[in-house]
Image (cartoon, rainbow, N blue to C red):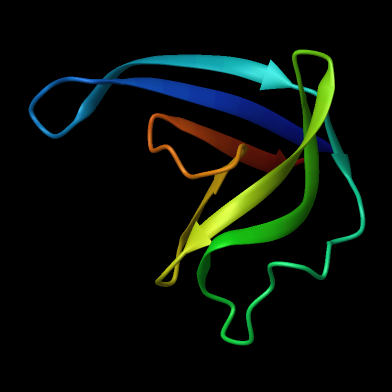
Amino acid sequence: MLKAYLQTKQDDGQGGYNCYLTQGLHIKETETPRSGQTASGYGRRLPTPYMVMVDRVWRRVYCICFSNAGTLYIGKSYDPKVTIDIYRD
Protein backbone atom coordinates (compact mmCIF):
# COMPACT_ATOMS: atom_id res chain seq x y z
CA MET A 1 0.00 0.00 0.00
CA LEU A 2 1.32 3.44 -0.96
CA LYS A 3 1.07 6.53 1.20
CA ALA A 4 1.86 10.07 0.03
CA TYR A 5 2.37 13.27 2.01
CA LEU A 6 2.62 16.87 0.82
CA GLN A 7 5.31 18.70 2.81
CA THR A 8 5.17 22.50 2.85
CA LYS A 9 7.88 24.62 4.44
CA GLN A 10 8.54 28.28 5.18
CA ASP A 11 11.87 30.01 4.52
CA ASP A 12 13.36 31.15 7.85
CA GLY A 13 15.43 33.93 6.21
CA GLN A 14 18.73 32.32 7.22
CA GLY A 15 19.04 29.73 4.47
CA GLY A 16 16.87 27.09 6.17
CA TYR A 17 13.23 26.15 6.49
CA ASN A 18 10.77 25.83 9.35
CA CYS A 19 7.01 25.58 10.03
CA TYR A 20 6.47 22.25 8.30
CA LEU A 21 2.89 21.40 7.40
CA THR A 22 2.19 17.81 6.39
CA GLN A 23 -0.93 16.79 4.48
CA GLY A 24 -1.85 13.22 3.51
CA LEU A 25 -2.78 12.71 -0.16
CA HIS A 26 -4.48 10.01 -2.22
CA ILE A 27 -1.95 8.31 -4.48
CA LYS A 28 -2.06 5.94 -7.44
CA GLU A 29 0.59 4.20 -9.49
CA THR A 30 0.39 4.52 -13.29
CA GLU A 31 2.59 3.83 -16.27
CA THR A 32 5.69 6.04 -16.37
CA PRO A 33 5.57 8.55 -19.26
CA ARG A 34 8.41 8.26 -21.77
CA SER A 35 8.78 12.02 -22.26
CA GLY A 36 11.21 13.68 -19.88
CA GLN A 37 13.36 10.62 -19.24
CA THR A 38 17.11 11.00 -19.68
CA ALA A 39 19.73 8.41 -20.63
CA SER A 40 21.75 9.15 -17.49
CA GLY A 41 18.78 9.01 -15.11
CA TYR A 42 19.61 12.48 -13.79
CA GLY A 43 17.72 15.67 -14.46
CA ARG A 44 15.50 18.47 -13.26
CA ARG A 45 12.06 17.08 -14.25
CA LEU A 46 12.04 13.28 -14.32
CA PRO A 47 8.55 11.75 -14.47
CA THR A 48 7.66 9.05 -11.94
CA PRO A 49 4.91 6.42 -12.10
CA TYR A 50 3.05 8.15 -9.25
CA MET A 51 0.13 10.55 -9.30
CA VAL A 52 -1.34 12.32 -6.26
CA MET A 53 -4.70 14.02 -5.83
CA VAL A 54 -4.36 17.72 -4.94
CA ASP A 55 -7.52 19.86 -4.81
CA ARG A 56 -9.54 17.04 -6.45
CA VAL A 57 -7.16 16.87 -9.47
CA TRP A 58 -4.70 14.04 -10.17
CA ARG A 59 -1.19 15.53 -10.58
CA ARG A 60 1.97 13.77 -11.83
CA VAL A 61 4.84 13.48 -9.34
CA TYR A 62 8.25 14.47 -10.75
CA CYS A 63 11.75 13.95 -9.39
CA ILE A 64 14.76 16.27 -9.44
CA CYS A 65 17.96 14.24 -9.20
CA PHE A 66 21.59 15.27 -9.70
CA SER A 67 23.28 12.84 -7.28
CA ASN A 68 22.42 9.59 -5.49
CA ALA A 69 19.20 10.96 -3.95
CA GLY A 70 16.23 12.62 -5.60
CA THR A 71 13.51 14.96 -4.36
CA LEU A 72 9.87 14.48 -5.39
CA TYR A 73 7.63 17.40 -6.30
CA ILE A 74 4.53 18.36 -8.29
CA GLY A 75 4.01 21.30 -10.60
CA LYS A 76 5.74 22.90 -13.55
CA SER A 77 9.01 23.59 -11.72
CA TYR A 78 10.77 22.49 -8.54
CA ASP A 79 10.10 24.55 -5.41
CA PRO A 80 12.11 23.42 -2.34
CA LYS A 81 9.28 24.68 -0.10
CA VAL A 82 6.76 22.13 -1.47
CA THR A 83 7.83 18.48 -1.74
CA ILE A 84 6.18 15.05 -1.81
CA ASP A 85 7.10 12.05 0.34
CA ILE A 86 5.96 8.58 -0.77
CA TYR A 87 6.10 5.47 1.41
CA ARG A 88 5.25 1.85 0.69
CA ASP A 89 3.91 -0.33 3.54
